[in-house]
Length: 292
Image (cartoon, rainbow, N blue to C red):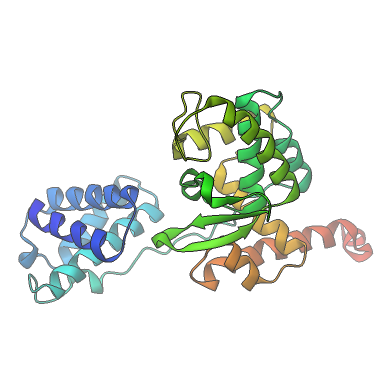
C-alpha cells in the first residue's frame, strides 16, 4: 500500500508544490485509512469509506478533521482513477460532514495595542518579538509566510514586504509605520549577532525561527497581556482583516492583502462586521436601549 501513497505524494510534490507539513498530514491520513480498511485500492468502494468515517465519528473526532481526511481520500482516489489503478473514484459519492460555521476570533483595537506593547526592553529578544507582533498585525501574514521571510524580502525604505504564500504564490504587502519602526530597531540588534543566515527572524543562536517558535512567542505575550481571547498568529491575521473591514476597506483589497485565492474565503469577515454593527446598534441606538 505504501507504493500507492508514495506515488500519490510524489505527484503532489511535482504538480501542486505542496508544503512538507501538508504532505505529512496526507501520509498520516492515508496510512490510517489503509490500516483500517486493509484492502487493495481496486477493491475499495464507497461503503468502505463510509465505514472509515463512521469509525472517526465514534472516536468523537471534530467534523473539520473528518472532512479533511475525506478530502485527502478524494484526492488520492482521483489520482488512482486518473492513473488507471481504479475504474472509478469511490470517494466521489461520499458526502462531507456539514461543518459548523465559526466566526474568526479577533482582538479589539485596544487589546491589539496592549499586545503590541507587551515585549519590554531594548535587547535582542524583546525587540525581535515586538517586530514579529507588529508585522503579523500590520501585514496580516500567515505564520508560515513569516517564517519563510528572508532579508531580501523586506524593503524598509518603501515599507513593503514580499511574501511567499500558499502554492509559492508571491505578493507584495505594505508594512505599517509602527511595524517599520519596530523592524528597524530589531534589525540593528540583529546585525550585532553577525550571523550569515538570511532568515529575517532569528533565534539567539542565529538560526531561523520555526512556525512553532513564532506561535510560542505570540501566545506568551498574549498571556502576559491577560487578554480574554487566546492569541495566536492566526488571530492577528483575522484581527488585521477585521480592522481593515471596520475601517472601510473593500473585500477585494483585503483578499489581495491576505493572499486568498477565492473571494468567498475573505467574505467570512463580513459576518464579523455585521456582528460588530449589531453590537454597536444594541449599545447606542435609542430604540434598542428602550426595548431592553
